[in-house]
Image (cartoon, each protein chain N blue to C red):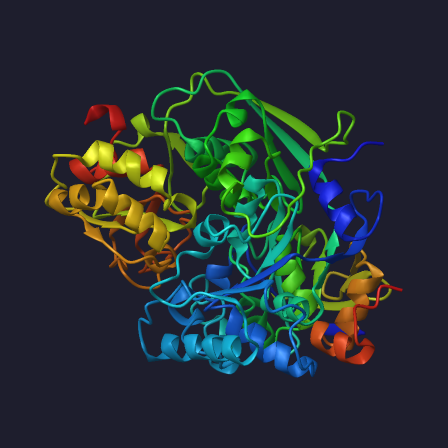
Length: 419
Length: 166
């Protein structure tokens, strides 16, 4: 029996020739990740384990990105715990303010997560790295603590759903729309416990930034991981970034799939997920009645250079609608610099948008753009749960950077071809 | 390990932001304080209704959303002894095992708010004492049962010095 790419990576890290879906295995992990919300809990658990040292100081990534730059005294205390732990244990990949970025934009960019890796992160969007052909999944702080001590984690080998995208991708339709379409189709628990393998000619031609967006939202369908077989596009991204060797895995012809779903993308239009679940998707042309108070362009889903590029293209020489607050957050310092060199930051500021240092900030209702009662935001983020960006009676609509930029100019949800 | 208490019922797709809202989630590591706000946006008085040992009973996909362990910890510290649902989101499920909160999958349509329940984890059965019926529960894999009965992953690890899969 053949294996999927997910099975192969897990088998290799469990020291086995073959693993089957449903099997419980103990795995070596290549990378363990935590942020300023989850790491303090993990550090407290780590201390309880009674272990002197971390398993490998180069393989633990600590990225304070959620409430940073410290938004208040409590978050400052949390970050201090992480910083002191990093110093005490000589953690190589601790990213201080000024050098940091949103974790899931930062680690691939720095070549710290690579094809063939097993990555666990105490953050649910850790599944982002599947775009590189890695097995990456979110865990809690206790798992993170145990992995920091042992370099290992237990997993149930997941079944895989294969998603095949074919046809010609229409203008303005992006990776965000493909994944929203998929979540709309299978629902927020449609891939519960499972691997989501994204394949087909559309994926083969999709840029890395768009692939990251797709893998990032696997968790919004309940997926354990999202994964894309590495190819030339992956290699050209990884080349020059990778700090160590890596392995390329591909699914076998006879690999077992729980299900195969095929999508013809030729007739797709940009989508908007309505409150309060990412599965509530509608075509943007059916959302134009929604007036908005705020637009957020950024996050681990859509804070990369191509996301800013498309927003800049739409906003160039135009003005933000007078009743809309627009907040643009480049995902990392490197993305920020690149956007500056290309003139995007100037375009945004001249249009009347606020540009922020990298942070998760408003995506989880943390800071930098909280909503008041009754307010509506269109965001390129990943969750639109009740109260996600602020008041329990505020609303979040999810869409691509193109829809977000167009809507910023019009003050209502707007298809990009209308501006 | 037998658990006993009454059912507090919720619907499908109860996400981690409902379990403990972002308004509180990051403010403190004091779980007792967080526990006071558990499920607040779904039922503002929920905390005051809990008798220690009670169960949260829900529909599909309980615990979807973020990976933060504050969600199961807030439930534990509110005095809830187990969560019973039709299905669970996986990170939440994992976090429950690791922090020592039993999670039980069964057909929760057979349970009404206020029903008295008794759960035997080893035998894999849930008695609905109010209705006088037994419900089959999906058995936990041995390793998870072991972690749970040790009181969570940290205690398990301290006991064995590693993961014990046998």
